[in-house]
Amino acid sequence: MRVGGFQPLSLSDYPGHVSAIFFTQGCNFRCPFCHNSALLATETTGSFDGAAAIQMLDERKRLLDGVVISGGEPTIHPDLPEFIRSIRSLGLLVKLDTNGSHPGMLRRLLREKLLDYVAMDIKAPWAKYPMLTGGFTGIEDIQCSMNLIVQSGIASEFRTTVVPSLLTPEDVEQIRCEMPVGAVHKTQDFIADYALDPALRK
Image (cartoon, rainbow, N blue to C red; front, side, top):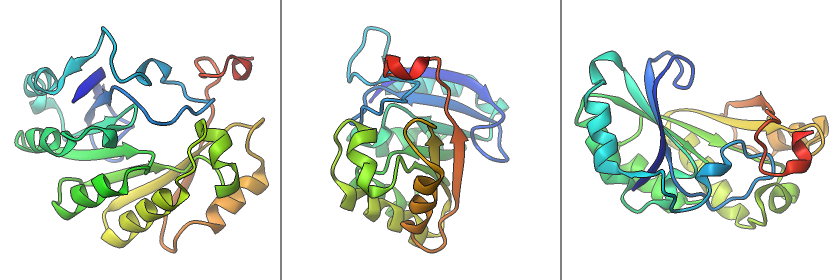
């Protein structure tokens, strides 16, 4: 597990809880509107391993209710379950932020009851997914992850970053039509300053 960033305290990223945030290093998407482009590469000189991350967390655990594991994309890391177990051993809740592209890992995490909350990004209606993810075409994997989350009954949300030049109101409505019954969908504003695509920073 490579961790590319650590936020020691957040009052907004885990609904109803005081949390810390780990940003895992590496992502399999290249969304043009991504604001965490420093986390896309699998390896960077500024990243650190999971053991160091747990040590940092242990020093702060009395101030926290839980931990958000974000990215990058956490589910590309094979040792994610072990990392989460280490967090839970400190008595902390775990929220996962994911793009839903690895349903096998998500299934394992849910089956082993390692998660307390899941937030999954829905980038676009299916027809626009390749364009808004840098070429990802595994729509069946995204659909599988959505169904796994909803059927598990775990606290969850599905969220879409609305980039006005890339997504129309009709696109957002189409996303909601394509979601499984029972899914909670939210939209979030686009932050242009650090977008991966320089053209979107204007």
